[in-house]
Length: 426
Ligand code: DSN
Image (tube, rainbow, N blue to C red; front, side):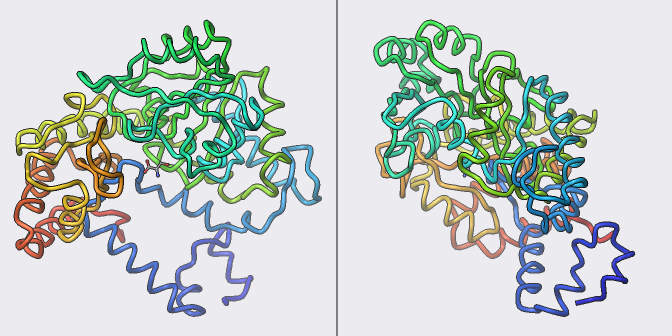
């Protein structure tokens, strides 16, 4: 390891690849290979993005060393003066950016944030109403293999079969029937906007806490590209690494009346020491999100997703719910004579990373599926636009229908990506 004295070159003594390479070439080589993978392939997983070098610098900093159980000014360890400043700045930035009354930056992940929400508002055995996983929900929204489905009575609502949009009539009927303690809206594979005013009215009618799991679309809210759930919801949980483009982690916003319950639920309720390097990196990201450049980015993510969905339809596939109003599209690939699994594998072989995904009322198992999910956060960060979305649709179509050409297609993919470099050297 280089001497600490040499760390003057790094204000934070972080992110020194040379140090890692000297000490652990095996792991250093993996970091280099992953960078090459990200640079030369198309990253279309809707929940991924390329975070900024500034965010990576904060993540790879000495703040990782600090135990800081508690909250700014109320810690269980000494020496928290500096991390207190970082967390306070982050909290204030989050409240300002989202117009929220309270923010907690400590959740280690989206699932951790969701566990904290359950713990703050419900007790094991209580009834919760959430979107079903096969219709686009999330494991933490009541899946039987997840804590949520094991410890809570989660009733599910879904989308209508005719238009593949949330069935608000069904949601209201279920809310009146089951009287849930909490209603969750938010999904991982729902391409349309959610009507938060309607959900608020249903929650009020049923006497339920309104919880929005905004993990997928919070970046679009931050960039003012879609309406915000914050004015309506009691609590909004999300991950910070998707469209938002921050470090991997979670965050919770809430009304002031729920602040103490949320904070207690995170610590000491279900986490110990916060990862202070991640908290600082979240603060860095929140500053980036408050810029006109980021707002432009968020709008472009949607324009690109709409262009990509339309171009995939032109290639003979079907866009679930007719297209997208967000950063992702759910694509039924059956017309090309393949399953979602086959499409995913064939695209992967051609350097296009996306995921198989169930479509609503999917006749195939979740491990096979009839669809794929594509998202534009990463390619938009690279600077690609609608022209490139058409090229990507053609590459996806050829990768699926001509698996024997995978090598040639992956060379074209690499050429496209090299024109929009990720983490350029200069
Ligand atoms: N795993 C995330 C996604 O891909 O949507 C959800 O947490």
